[in-house]
Length: 64
Image 1 (cartoon, rainbow, N blue to C red):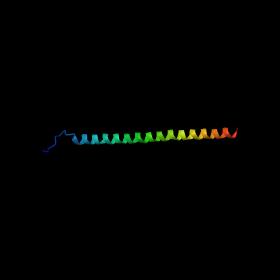
Image 2: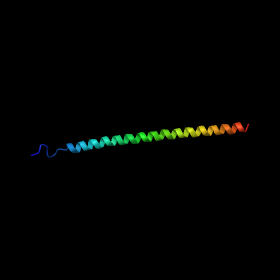
Image 3: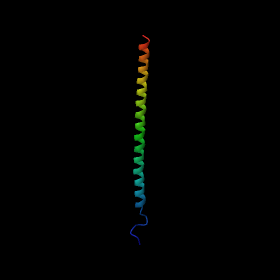
């Protein structure tokens, strides 16, 4: 007979644990990239708003 029991699920359990670790790493990467995209979007909005304020200032100075 073999050393392992007929109902030994250790291979299955280790595969499930590895899949769960990989899934956690994947979700961490997805969340990190999403956060970076959010920060980039906010920075873009701030730069555009600063440009609009600067253009309005130039127009107001010219029309004095």
